Image 1 (cartoon, one colour):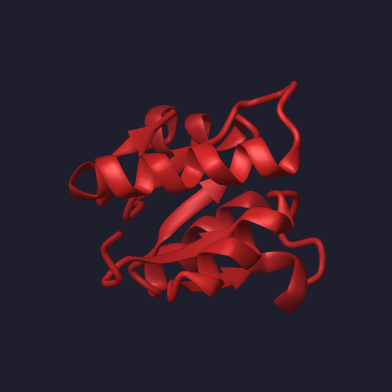
Image 2 (image 1 turned 90 degrees about the vertical axis):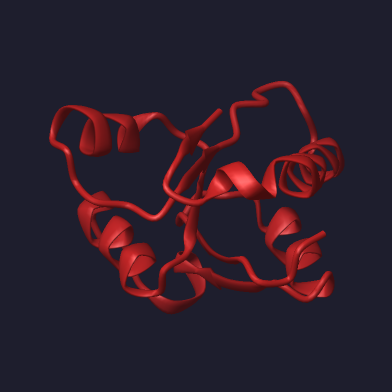
Length: 109
């Protein structure tokens, strides 16, 4: 996997995935570790300030970037509602490995 990508994980993003990405050498800022209940626009701005891909599990950010045209550096929406943490981790790592060239400045589901 490429090691030049960095990530910001939204507050409710599965922390098992965060830990695995860190173990693989990625820089991952977990909002839940660093901030307390900040609004989605602030989360998005933090990701932009860090030039990082935002990792999310809810669709709220779609409205911010598509309807309100807020800037972003890339968003990966993980909607695996019935998957456990191990399956989510596997799938996210697969996507990052195979789609890393498309992650920047894209909204991927």
